[in-house]
Image 1 (cartoon, helix red, strand yellow):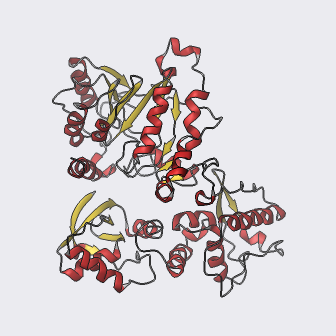
Image 2 (tube, helix red, strand yellow):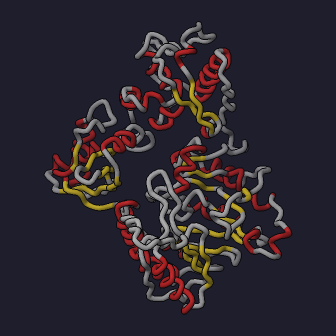
Image 3 (tube, rainbow, N blue to C red):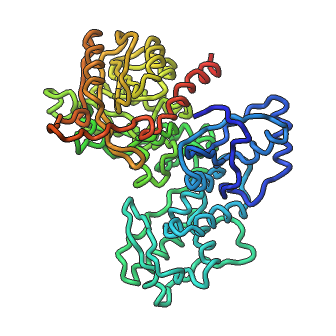
Length: 518
């Protein structure tokens, strides 16, 4: 959450410093800018219930302390010191003072020196640290006589979304077909993308020669900066890459097409929409119960970094509406950006407008949007086949939802009360057409949870009085199964289990946004 935190509470001694050293000139420069009234992004800290561990913003904290400031704006996230360390190694990859090669080396060594993280593949460590895989391979090789004789412990590797174990001890028993990239006194810059691919392919070939069923890596996508404006866009464009592109490159990406079709849902998790379409992925809300973040960590090479996927813009046009849509509207409904918040304030307006143009061009489908930043919806005009929704999982979001949707222009307006973490009381639901209510499926950070029936019945009564249609998700209710003389299981402590401190950040964000964009 974005808040002000006393500097005296911030711990900087937990091994979370990602750089080789603090640059005093940068501290002095930041202090001068702060003293002149300049605004800096919040620092990132992880709070474990007793200590605040700094993960990003060491120069900003040092500058604020030099000025004699009492506090500093901070993005406070639930987590341990270890969470802060893992976040810190990639924190300055795309922002802040440019990292030196020694900074990158320190980040990689932080993971290699850890018993658990050292078992990760070079690719995974490279992704976490914001460096290339050969860079990790060289650093790992420098700490061992031979990168194929590191340790007998199994190494974990990922290929095409599949995790497998590579026994490096077996590989170390034979002479490798290819040696790792040489380490020389002049090898100070990171390898190119082509060098990364060549090295990665050689590693896979060596593993195959040793008897392991390891697929070869796909050829690298041509770097954005190397493409001609007339050439097709990359498979995905991260937010950081978008900011470096020329106007002509952006225009070409926004017009990209591809042959793929939308995804047909294979389970009942979002049965109200039988199709999903993700031309934009990634999110920065960092909600504890986020299923999309877990999926992205497993299958997306860019992780959950906000990204634009140009070739997916043509998916709705490529997908025929099934005949079953005539009897079940769910087969006509498309959950749009189910792996993102399209209206998060970090999303470029061009991405949103490109998606909305596709919506307007494909009236045969209903496109369902869902956001935790509803105030931004008022910035756009929507066609009639756009169903505009906002998530209200706790009472703290109610006022923002009501205020924002009084200004929204477009088709169907709906509420997603999933997961329902508190009993909700609305001033009015008259501006909504539909209320979807659900519990919480289990995630890597939060438990499975079904809200008490009293919460559900109260919300449904409010919806009925306002004339709203109601949709109960499959994960909502659980049968009551009680026995005399047997104690009922203690209820889940929802605020603790779901780390609900994130709500304060999300509730405050719209207020700040309104001040920035009056």
